[in-house]
Image (cartoon, rainbow, N blue to C red; front, side, top):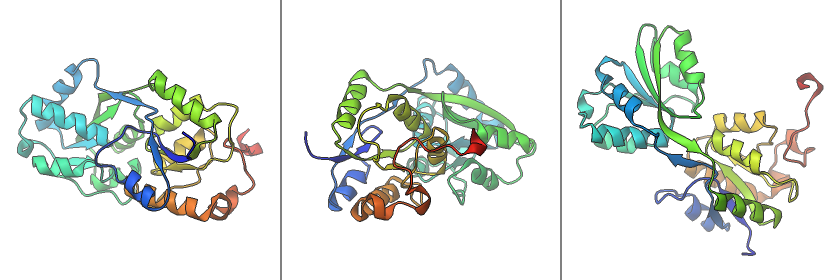
Amino acid sequence: MTETFVLLTRARRDDDPTPGILREMGFETRFLPLVCIEPPETWRDVDEALRTLDTCDAVILPSANAVRFFLERIEALEIDPLQAPPVATVGPAGREPLQAKGFRLLPLPAAYSAAALVETLGDPAGKRFLIFQSNLGRDDLRLSLETFGARVDRVTAYRNLPPAAEAVSAFREWWVSDLVRCVAFYSPSAVRRFRELLPESGPKDVPLAVIGETTGAEATRLGLRVDIMPGEATAEALAFAIGQYLQLGHREARQPDTTTNTNHQEQKHDANS
């Protein structure tokens, strides 16, 4: 393989528009999941939580994976979606299958963030919410709701595990061979794995693209420069943003405050030392 490509750091999905969009814009893609998504070791906690749905005011599913495993257990337990509380999602991912099953959906938040989601829930005081997350899911949503007086049960619906050995080997080989044109991240956990695996040798100016603010914040926290973030946190919007960025070229498209930094590890200001 000698052709450069955009590295998509998640598993291939049949409904992912990214390869088609980028191919039309002149760029090839490769999927390489930097995280492995697996069910929990036991469904006990998930099933116990689902059996108490009638005592919840809303179910919160922060990711497409949360939606997938939630629906899997709903079907296994033969729970009637029409009798379930309304469901909130942080972004549009996964809403279609929820609607198809008959779940009531709360409005999408104005922004794809925990703070914006809290606003869609009305006054949380005294209410009970059930959050389905991964074992590595951020705790900011639960803490925000509890600050407003809500009761929150957080359940591990799936596990976010390290990438397979062959994925690690492929990533390092592609990276040091300077084949990666851009890296696209769809979750904070993928950013963390990337930072852990990033070789010391290899290119230093490959642009990094994130799907939304939460993933971008994690990249910044780890000292990585974010070059591309779409206005809407969807795979389609991210694909177009990547294509437009690459068509312009790194230097022309990069924001002014990043032009002096040519390394993926950001320069630390004295105030942060």
